[in-house]
Image: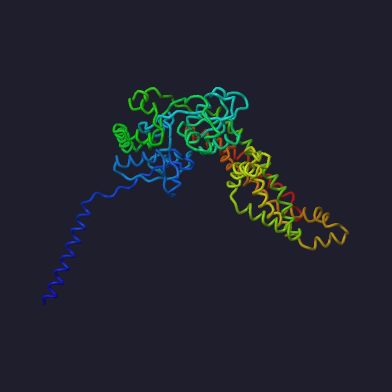
Length: 502
């Protein structure tokens, strides 16, 4: 009896504990969804970059600033990796809540988005090699033959355009300094925090690069929100003001060696009033000729790259079909190797790694290739592997009796191949070969990673500069169609003509 009473009492105590636990949880405020912050960590020091000592974690002065903002607004913030040139479009689509990655306050962004109050004053800094004697300021870059590099969609690229200085744009901030070091560029114009990272802090670059002239063209870094996120942006404005007032911003910038007179002037509020410009937009007369130049580059890369692929493909195919065993093995290794690696990796290797290999081996011959030549060679090697398989299949489809018929007429094997086998194989080869040609035509866009300004690269530069994605995008699509549709028509014409009598 007493045992039963004890069991019932214990049960009631358990139910009472569950009731009070649920009641306590119901009284707690609901957990807030984390805000999504986007930036580009690819070579992104000192803003955001992967921590070499803790893979999967990020470091940078903006990372420290995000941690301070989390505490101020009382809401978790999660990082999302996006390419720098796609940050604005990702925000516009609603993929993220805000973008912060050294994004400058520009009139165009003010029209499209809600910008926070400035959290940092930047300036631009020109960098050259230590042995450079021609360039001492930005004006010296106006001389013919001077090659300047910068990031697209930045204050630096806009200033170079305004000054009428020809420049090459990059998708990341590491590559232009690497090209400058290797002699592919004569100067690089980028934000001072970036320039300091690669000349003052990085030992590899420090011995080879130097500043040219004083910092110029001050501007502001801001956090970018969608227009409808006014309430969230106001929270961040208040948080930035509070962090500045209590000295947290200064501590962060001093820890990263980024505190300077500009930041002190920003605290007074006077500097902000002096740095306003008006919004500008590309006109058709301005952007279309540049797109045409990019289209010409696309056609050149496609034609030359495919000619090289054809020149490689046929010997490799015949080696696999008729060569001795060692030659067949070499041809097979070639095909499997170049089909197995991405063409993007191949371009990086040829452009960046090959010169370093030459220096390490003390070959006495420069292995530095210009970006256009790297594109042609890279596409030729990659597509040559695919073309060889198409040719091998086409040649192998011709019945053995054709060889026997030619031999019975006293023809040599080479003449049989050239006069009988190959003409018939072309009818089989042509359709997939023309498909590859059209595919290469569109794949040329990947050469933008080594700063070749083909059609797609020019679209990205101009559309991002003033956020004109629609009108410039439509013009770009029209040019692609104008170039690709005739290729398809030519392919069908050749198939009809050469396919007769099959």
